[in-house]
Length: 257
Image (cartoon, rainbow, N blue to C red; front, side, top):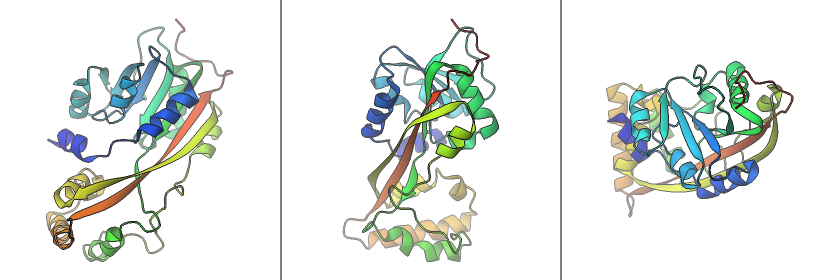
């Protein structure tokens, strides 16, 4: 099942990211948090563990069912269209590796409408980064991607930790939020061949590959990792946590309690 694969293969976010999130927002036990696009609950678990009341909005039915098993309220539908119960406001709207899928012309306005005055928006995405002295496996594998017609652009490079772009300008351009903190986080996950292939099977680009492309690529991954003494690859992840406060002058269309 795709939802189970996603939950197994996608990385957990580091606890220090949530330390920063809660410190910057001041959210505490009992506060209302709305998570946008929770998928299987990779960010939901650490959010819930710190005591707030979490409501999730998830478009995918199977992903929503997986997240619902965590014991939180999961609403199946689109964030852009969802309406909370009358009078409901949130202290925090959070999105983990989902915010970039939403229309910038809609998402900031919608988040602002759902937040109490002075509430916060927080979002981040897990991305592949390669540190200085990191595992050379990914660069070594690029000729195989080129061979199957899935290579990187000629001028593309792997970003290093701390070099991921931030969305400060986009947030400020909305006119609805002021940025209160941007924090870069990076961490490492070690995979064996099957674990790494399972991770790739959660990415849309690999899912869309033709069977012969995947067979060639995955066969080469297995062969190359089998030649390593430990049979493993080290993949470095990076995430840029953005935290922004709702501007007090914005008038919400959600009725206050």
